[in-house]
Length: 241
Image 1 (tube, rainbow, N blue to C red):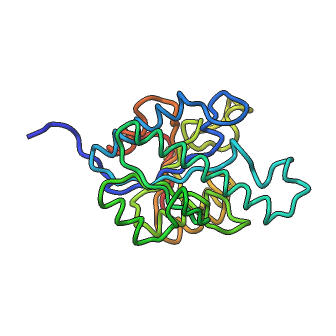
Image 2: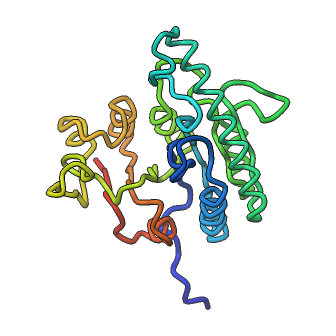
Image 3: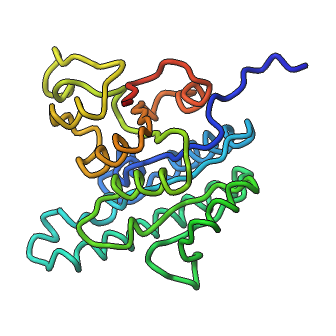
């Protein structure tokens, strides 16, 4: 028998901001970062974990940005949703180069480049061991990719929503601005909402609270963290009911 530790989650949804893809760049996608990320995701897939992925579009366009300030909000958000499709296709290419079969399913239909999002189809892909990248947000303006991640995680019966960030968890204030910021190891959804800790937006937190879905916030830049989370080790901050 193998002595290798077993994952504590069978199916997870990973939420990644578009800004994370640019790493230290001002704009776009850092190819080294996306290659490393793909290898980490491919590794947990080989452990038998079914993986869904939601990526933001902020490295390309944000509906709430200054550039969109004079635009109609619905139009700006639609551009942002299209940006998530671009990131998803880039991620698909990197994952398949890392040996992980992948499908991109978009809430905004673009049949020439990806499949339309259908819940049962997404689940079937995951059951077959394919990494499913869920693009296009919810398909509706006024909803963030945080909300899309919470929605898809619940629809696809994920056991945890993993939020990959540039910090090592949730703090009571911005640790970059305040060196005395206090990190939480555990937190409830309601506490995060009441204290406005910006773990995710309020809609996403409320949905996870109501369904009892745990959120694990961790630092993606630290090597091995994603694997450690999957194995149930204490990493970052866990937000539960």
